[in-house]
Length: 350
Ligand code: N2P
Image 1: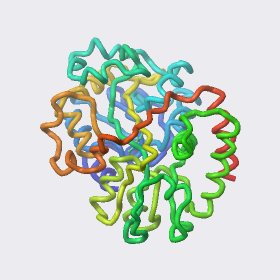
Image 2: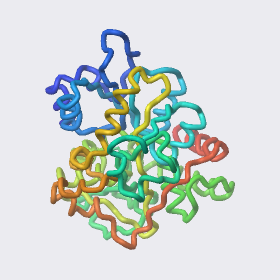
Image 3: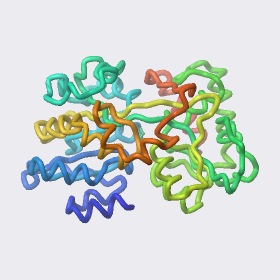
């Protein structure tokens, strides 16, 4: 909510208000306005304000809750958006479906600022289509006042103690729910082995009485208000929730967690590719990357940004996974795994 109010104050327009509004195709009246479509609660208002101040380009922001939602919207046709943010495991899928414009980020003036390890990423080795936005981990948060713990396993999320009956929030995305369940069961992401998937379905079915809702929007608010007392969560959101409610705790489980990096990309049909490229270059500036990290609570990929990070955030446990924590990046599910996951998802959600 805070972010949305701030956006209104900056006059970024009504589009910033909707959680998942219908995209309005760009038209002559807003030529030169940059239309950003990003994950929920993930774009620093100060960043957009600074971009507008430096370039004179106005910005609108709409949000979505998952890669699956973004994929469905882009597949449905031109959206009027100039910039989107795609997770590592979905970049290839978007590319293969011909949904992205080549940005050739390596030729941009600020590209050299990217940490060398993130200049060549498995999912986009030559930065042909994307540049890093933020990266973090996926695990879960619980309220230590409701359940004192100790908690060291994803088992607390998937086979919760009785006190969590009807109290758990899970993401609204098949890839993010099922890959975490697979990790708990000791299987790789995007597994298609029938017996592994059978066990995963059984686990998620048995978890259902504990689940209040499957929804990736609004998790910070639900955890801090007590509407849910445990939730699947991303690390930066977990930090923000814990700062607001100190009894909340993000778990670095012994089974590990899912790692991800989100990436800026330009969708096919973007009305203003040149302005989108200006924003991509702007994001590879250390100070700008830090503004975003300070807002959302995630690591960025830009060298020299550390000195601009808020000390409390930079030192927080959520921002600094233990050195022996197993972080598993999903390779991106192929068509078969995606179909298997959709089948499980449909069964769980019925
Ligand atoms: C933060 C959104 C994180 C997206 N609110 C994880 N891919």
